[in-house]
Length: 179
Ligand code: SAM
Image (cartoon, rainbow, N blue to C red):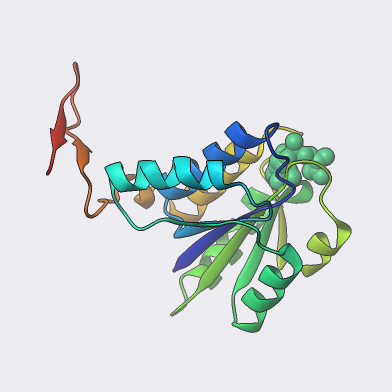
């Protein structure tokens, strides 16, 4: 399964930190990359720096037109999950999404917003999914969705080509450094 995050409505400066966290959560929890509708090279650089040190091949693409990205994704057979508090409760749809995601060559796009999300996104999505029907955060919604979808397996992922790797410890800190 390939998972890609589409981050909509990123406002330069104001959303820098949150969007960086959307990318870091996506990377850490099993997504292949993040498409960002703004042209924010600062966010791209921060996430790429983390990937260089901590491994894996997470990509960030900026300046993406969301309507084209969604259209192309669907044309290529991908499915679109839009995270919104107005959607169906995740507990009621996650089995259906997982069944689709476990098919051969499945591709799942996870859309998260910042400010108001255009109505067309609700229409284009295969699922509008609420992580509870209360307003909270795109970072939390993304994290919980990825975890429910992959049933925790993503937490054991080994990241290839890492310069830094943590040796898990009950107490203290140990980091392996590779040249
Ligand atoms: N009123 C906005 C809306 O249209 O959903 C809330 C914006 S919220 C600050 C930013 C993003 O967080 C939303 O676009 C959505 O992706 C995500 N989000 C917030 N609460 C959520 C929830 N309960 N379930 C799923 N996603 C949520």
